[in-house]
View 1 (tube, rainbow, N blue to C red):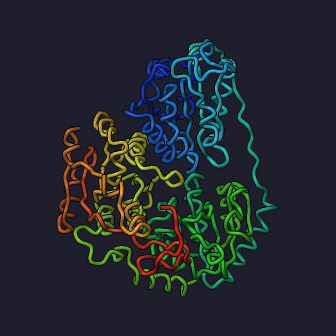
View 2 (view 1 turned 60 degrees about the horizontal axis):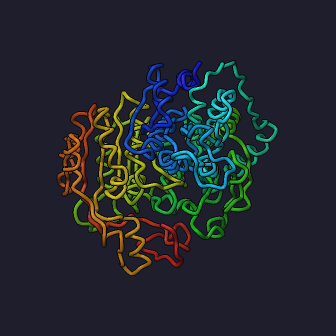
View 3 (view 1 turned 90 degrees about the vertical axis):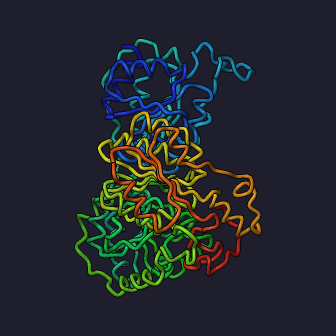
Length: 572
């Protein structure tokens, strides 16, 4: 069997229904074999970064590794931002790059390059993959392929890169049965004492909370988590990467915490005296810069699958190193229904009434972005996911979208890459073809991969594209307002954006623009009239609208702008 024919067969056997790519000479054998086998859809994008983000969207929706392919040289290097995004956000993915023939590789020669487009992508990708290797021996191709998929999905999920020279791709090989590696699990003798101590602390606490992070979704255990928290009766706060774990209206859901968290959620987190942390790494955007102030008066119980994340920034946690699904399975079986802390829940509810998410921008001219997110949620109940780019709109969406029980929220967290949303939405739409998805991007981020409008049109994907156009790079402009006395170089000064309605029209995609708050309902009616087809809605927002609330950097997380002011310099 030709090596690439084996890969085509194996992709189908791994339940990979689509691969994402931009064609190039060094992957022509792969493209031809997958095409001839006919079981895996080939989705052609217009930039390799877009293919990588599409694979990420696919992997996050399905749990099956997203697969993206690129040719050697610039094709391979263009994948790297998406590779890193999968690594930081724990997304299973397999990236396959073509490489020049083995006899064209420079090896140990003291030259920069021998073959045309020869590039050492393995060395470049190594820091942002779980494993990266060049398959130099055709006899090891099958083993390398099986290892790639196993590695991508086991433990903390993440990306793997296989670099395959062209002459290896066209070699004849003989596939053989491969036995999967057994993965060890944490025993109940370790979990029992941890769970007992945790339950005792939560029951004795006056203001307990459960803090959930992106590990819940990457561990594919949201349903099990829901069963546990309903037994415990403890209010739940979530990070940016866990917006979609609990339905918006769940009675135990408090809200998002962190730098741009809901004000009432950060107040509750600050006051809490006992916190069970599940699948979150407690980074600076969740705790603020002052970890001593964050930890004061609190006991922490932390479950994560990586030992290195324990007591990393927030010290003194009682820890359990375990895959979250294993711990939750054990805990659900052991825990009986607990009494809810009704006074604590009432206090949180009153704080939420005092600080509504759509009241943080009083007096804003034109459209209030938080109120728009509420309207968008109501208009798109059939959406499989809201795929959100990076910037102020990301925070408005995370603060205010009202997600249903079967809806996902996907955004670029650790990498924080502008340009994520449009191609990732393509991956989501391919993964879940029978439901529409909603993409939300800012004018800056949307331009980063705007060429993928043609991909959306060509495949007639049911993506509802929302462009929040404030005609600037808003998050960095807000940063400049705080720290650079309003000198808006390269965010407002020297920046411009097109009329996206006209851009969409040139791609033959229906489009509309909304400028006034009184026109939002009409825009929502237009957007939802045909959920089986793509369309684009441009929402014009005041250039100087800020994403509030925002933790005043250097202050405790309960002290948030605009009422508090930062006392230290931060990153954006």
